[in-house]
Image (cartoon, rainbow, N blue to C red; front, side, top):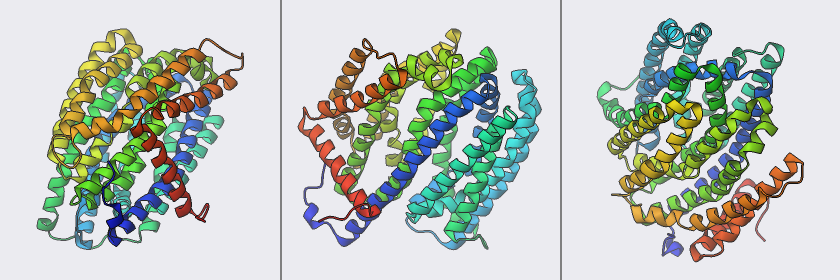
Length: 502
């Protein structure tokens, strides 16, 4: 996968590599803090609030998420991947985004009574109206975040992430302790978005002004249109399960499903999103250098697999102990949901990187078509599993994801471009042995317990990663992944100033 002539690396490529590694280091550090905060949020709030509180919030979020798909219009990705952009174009995109955001906030608020009737739950009405305001907040900051990402200013982005998540968590815990209700979750969302907005405006230094003529932004709107089409279809793939479970099974079942999802799949998405923030602009700049493009993508994707595969296997094999230990016995029914979602989570962090390939190669039309296929197959799985409740939905989704969407995606994204399908399979192959070794050790540990759940969980987590490392040592490509990981840690430490080379 590595370039065959790294000694000929140009100063421009070396500078880009340095910025990418430094950005990945800063972003990774911030993401570790963010995931830890999210983990604390899931565990602590689960003990302060009831499953019904989470279920009511989860009833409203799909419609809010759907409306926010249109709010963005794919313009942030258009800004990030554009070869050149003027201040007038940035201003034009800002005013378009803000105008659309205000319109959509009004539409969402107007839909609140209908949503209450759909779920037969009056509490969702006021919550929906309140969440409408967050759409305008998102519109005010979208272009500022995109500009920071485009300029590869990862340190301020990381600090904003940490500050907004910490602020949101503090507000949620305070209100959840003072007056436990669904409004603790809303307050966390509002605080997080306001802190993020302030940070983006202060850090970017850019202020919107007079917009460029529409003819100068039309092409960017067209590029954003492909991303938006994918986001619309992806919305159904990511949210219709909540809608169906909430409508058919009620708030309590939805609360169990929502917490299982938040504890597993959402943190994994939080790994990919900030790394994608680094990789999309990097890959966009390397689009004319196929060999370096492949190398940059392959090494990043394999490091994601190294981190996530053993961790997800640990979560699957220990779900029946992990869930009640962390969240309380009242959440034990979420364990089988959690385990089934883990099956899909084994590959999703890697498969999600396909979006980097589509966007950085400006194949947004194909990205949109993939999104439609993804949505149709996900919705079919949700409907097929619904008669068995939340567990059935999770199982049907996981099985269809592994046997239908995974091979289809790897074939489709690899049909053209610098990274072909056979290279995608080559990236993943070393982790078959690593995953098998990790799963075998975890299955054996289930037969041995100390009687102390936290000790057992700690031993299982360590064993999962050690066994995966041993599995990687069995092949030359696996050993290359481990060496690459050590090299990246050393380079990241140097960039962060943790140590200096001798």
